[in-house]
Length: 453
Image (cartoon, rainbow, N blue to C red; front, side):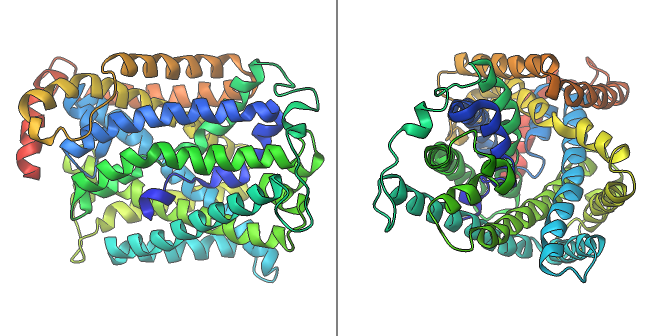
């Protein structure tokens, strides 16, 4: 259930209406392109993770393939991304909860959800998994129910509805009302809702059957994205005109449910969104702490991060991650237009950097896996190396377009500045060409194989 629901980010529920407003029904192409990119990246990551599962995931693979400077850089950037997400999601959950119980101030709700989920992560890995199982279950059931109900309404099979046909897809200035370029702009708005798909490869390092878990999640990512993202979005833009004010005012899913007269649609979606947000917060804390734990084991973070408690959890890494999250929450309330905006923009494009590093790491590790551990090569990237190069080109195109796009430029510039800063520190600590460069990746890969045997 975690693997199935993990691909459903909170952004699908709260950010899709902006994409529809930008690209119209063409948002389906935006989701398809973004989904294709994620499928290919996940296939590459799955290939490496199935052969050598580890809590450091792509950061450790970059360490082995490209050099310790690469593992250091992408590991800390990824940690930074998720601790900022902690603040964003805690604030989003608090905003909804305050609407339900106005007597409790928003900051108190933010504090409460952070404390509760910190406690669950400190108890044991099983506590994280238990909470995430139910959060993921709510998301899966919600999207599944929406697809069934909305699908019946589209064909006029729901009582009180008539078949809507393709009017909303092809009418209102056509399928691409704002032109083909809007598809790319829409892609920038939706692509980051896929961030988090890679979490399963970090969690695999602590599972009983890591290779099997990674293989199953990687192989199913195509239909998960196809059904949950493309399927639900197709129904939304079929039921609701893309230029309807309801999309912006109510959100895409609420607008679609209200269109077919489903009672209490807003309340239902608020419950689902809170679940999705708490799921993201729970996973974000788990992911940030495990990345800090991995960095600590490799000597790229304080040694305390590499130590685990009697319950088997990296307590210091969890506390450090949640502490930064608490600070970011404070900035969201005290300096929302300055410090917090900087944190958001400077971490926003990290997903693209992570995906690029995964591609370059797989280019090198694929041959090492084939040569040194063929029995573990259970997940294979399709059409290697051609699709890997094509994915790199697609990601670089998106990066370039973000510099060109008015809405994405500031985020890309700020993220690049932070990325260059992290890279500079990584290069200073781990000089390329030295004993810890990527030239001994095969040796480190074999060592990792022996450790996982």
